[in-house]
Image 1: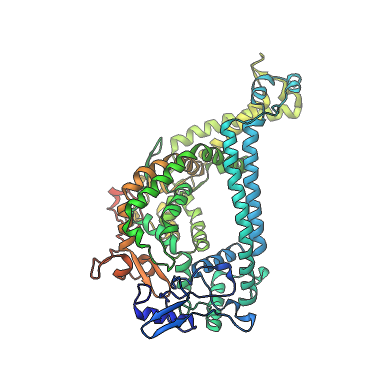
Image 2: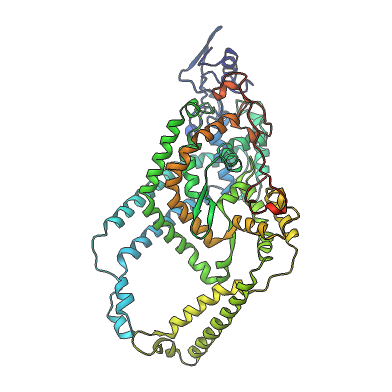
Length: 586
């Protein structure tokens, strides 16, 4: 036995080191290759600390996979998960120039949001704007910028935290450039795809060229052949676990919200925390589920509580940053397209419910985007006629006043500024009323439109054909209000989605400190029972293999002959009388 693994695995690892077809090398063989940027050990291969492997037949000497020519530079990849993830990211963002430009723009947006937050809180003289600026003469006397002064403690801490985050992002970009250049070289020289051609090819073409390159050079040394499924399993290794945890109700996500009632919250904030405390740390160097994760549930609970406390400490700053960023990002869109205020989108929790195993993000985006038109028509097929009648009145009144104000401005533009209603000093000019009525008109117009005639059943069937994941109980019941309410909880107004994200910032500390630790045993048990070992890939979520068979007991820390893993149980509902609980997937 070498490194705690059977002798057969040690021999297989030696075969991998010599370029043979040994599948997964698991006996402590360290594979070297020239592009060191991908570092680490061979994906799914052993994680030994030495340079030789001892077997009963004697030591097998480790040697570097070096070649006489530079052509063999890419003939052995170290961390295959990281390599294929970077290959996919390079494809999705369409080349080196697009990636660098996107990263720089993101940094500039972050910097602008930080500066805008500081200006709004510390630079603008709000007292002068709101109370001293009454007319043209008084406004000329008001200084709209405060005199330079030391920022408040809260704003100073806010600037410090996000400045450190900005600096960290800049350093991460500087470190990433080297890896991006190497991936770019791989695409150009090995796959024959420069950045111009990459704009026009699909992922299937990239995978085809990867498979052909594997036949030529065996750059994946843990397997003789490479398939699209192998690539997807590696790229989606962690995401598959999150899909399984969400679709099987393992994570405690339900939160009681004001005005909205009980809702499952899986927003970007909580998703990032789940990756940090669980998914990013669940694998060891051999791409096996870490034994301490399965054996040390109290340690997982401690990490959850610590993450919750950190989120609580950063709560005021994250809420302020998100509010400013949302305003800067969507204000112009709402001004240019007022109807966008009534636009809908899927909630983050719904998107994870609709996600399929091994489904790459660009494929998922295409599938979900194809459902938006039918989803919007289905929701609009159930109009609130009482609200529509009131909205038509508001639209008529607001539109009439706005039209009068615009007509007066055409006849005499000074009327908009100097005519006040009421006439005393505290009254507002017509320009203020024009902005007020225009806003009311924009808000009421989407609700005042007559619903388009259509068949709810056909719309919902079209949605189901795209999202692939609606309860069977909804079939034939699309006309029911209960189904409509359940679907509307998945397909919410964009403003409600933002409200859910803000509520998530408030609820995440509670979820991580209380709800998650209470469910830690259930999470660990689910991981233990749904882990499958794939030769040459490592441990993956059993659901993603599409073969829900018993995984090796040794990999899961169980005795051989232990209980078999349970297949995820589809959540089903009754007939049309049980449609309100239809937020689940099947």
